[in-house]
Figure 1: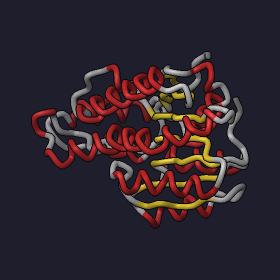
Figure 2: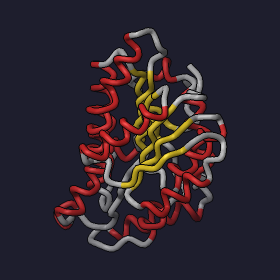
Figure 3: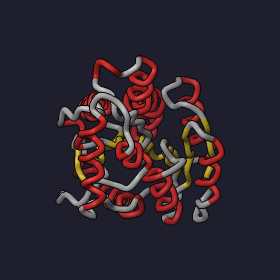
Length: 252
């Protein structure tokens, strides 16, 4: 398949970093967008940079059923709804697992996992219905991470959330024949999450800061725009990636 030009895609986590870069890259390809993040001001800035096609914003927590439903309603209203890309994520770095406050743990899981579930809940039936009537399959893209396969003190909630999100992707792939779905691991990208980890506080902070700072010192970090282009290449091969977790630059 190709990047869905002249169609509409929902994008979460669009207010900054990789999400904003993906929004601008898709817009340049003529993709209409429904952009989501919790902060309206930054989300509006992203939309203003989407000069290649229409972009609407829906601010709020996509882990909420009402917000997820509104995202799908807006996408259907824009026409030719083709799928979603779930790029939202929260890190809360530093604490050991037993130190993480409940509200922070829930926030991390909501951003990656609960929001993913809500998008599946409301978007997939619509996309399956469209495919049933002969349209090309839609896409359901989740942002995974190498953290899904490791136990890293200081980002326990994030590791757990990404492991669960990637398994949700595999479950969807096993159940749905109306969407191509895969998890994209975007690489080690210079984002606010990286900055937060380099200045983390808590019982695991010393080790975490050293690890993340070493990536910056060694020049391993890539820019969000590079990661966004990597994702677009994979979307064009979504039919070959169904049910897979794939990292930037990996051969398909």
